[in-house]
Length: 416
Length: 136
Image (cartoon, rainbow over all chains, first blue to last red; front, side, top):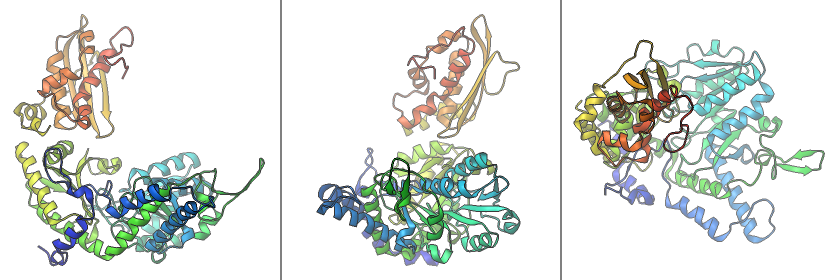
């Protein structure tokens, strides 16, 4: 074991686990649930589940218009959640826009900012490790505008190559880049990318879906222009995410979706739009979802994001060590836990990842198998699919041991 | 459903699939994938007098999709195209030797059959609905 591992004690994690009702359940075969798919969606603590039912049971009302008591409570809770998320990311309240998820946040920037500012001959710079949600919108934009989609390459350990960053930045209007890869685990050194992009006159949009849940993110310190967050990967409910945008940029951008709540005054001929952040929130938002995400942020703040990261490094380095000893197992991504999030993609001999996942499932071990919405990255690595285990605050060393044991069983069954 | 993987013949078909490869100038062929998992299968047929006289398949994917396609190629050799169109999920499961397969994996098990039927349909005078009444 490495020195970092002993700093996180089992009793700390056991206390956290007690807050997650699902972790006390068993599979239909009576196996304890070993949940290792938090990169797909995290489990939810009692505090988040209760925040949702409290809203529906005691103050369910639409926001921003009712003058009665429960409507005011709902508005306060919704806007309070926004303020908590703003503080979580070190942003201003007006700079946090509620979306359905990180994908919608990226699409908001694509449709509002990029369609207005990107022209034929301009370039959009992304990396080879992006999730489909940070490739497909830009492919469509490139088709529509005649802009070029350009890529930063990866090295043999799945790290983004930045040696040619300045050359690649020529003519670039926007850098759209993941903070952490959902397949390789790679954490991208944004502190190098963002100043270089700004010096070249480009803006930077960061896909933070795999980062904000796992380590401290300070949008001001990063000086990032747009930052997309997914709520359900950070203990929140599904259907809620946020976009951070610098106020001056958001103010100059046209609305994305149009309808109620995003307006100031409407006549049959003309509409003036609401101020930030509501200009970008058309229709009734996922009120319960936002309140639930606020509770999730409170929960994470209670643990402290530095602790969350420390626990993840400890668990990831333990897992990397143990998995390296499993015969026929190949690991992908950076070698050191410090350079990656708690995501480990692997293959096991010639056993297909779906078959591995099925065998692990029979042991109660939940992992993801497939291309993880990174088909081009799998093509690049010469893989059709991988298996992926991912960790979060409630995972223990015993979970890693269960994973390794189940993989050894899979290897026996496949006669590797 | 993990008990499936303990069956020697599943692994045997996975590692050494029957009728694997390509035909020279096949009469009928079809290729499709399951976009959710990336499994891909191509089936090629030689047809004489309305019957399948030879068959090859190629594919990438899990043990279930590859083994079930491999077994299916043995099943349909000598069948008429119409007979192959009457095959269904139960025939595939019978080949695999199970009645119990999870909803997530049934698509793996039936991918080969779906591709075979599409290939066979290419040789029919008109589009032929499968047993669920669906073209695909």
